[in-house]
Image (cartoon, rainbow, N blue to C red; front, side, top):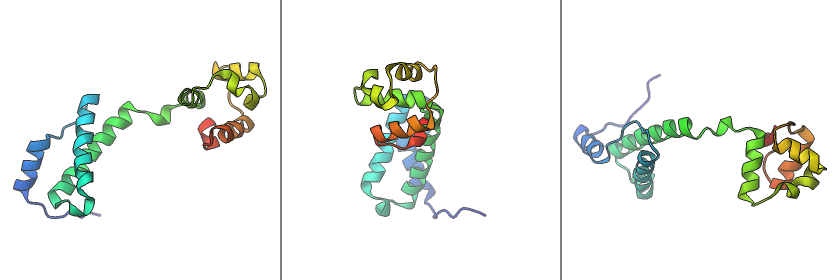
Length: 137
């Protein structure tokens, strides 16, 4: 099934391409620049974009998504790294989780990667951090 694309003026689109210079993103600086261009179009309003701007928007968001999938691998995070990130974001120390885990030694074992987080502890952590228990399983 073919995707339906609005008819675009090739000259207008070429001018937009020349102005924004979209290309495969390889650095954080290039990603930031592309994000600024996308934000500029978002600020204009989706319903106010020309067909050429909509086409450019799709291209740039695809380039950004590709870069971020390669460099920000959120799916590669482990339950323990997620736990550590949540602790860091809230300035928590291991002792702040002793009650959640039930003991100092269990807290230490989990944070050091010596023990997995059990389903019951995942539920307790989810309640403590107000997040989904699936993050810790």
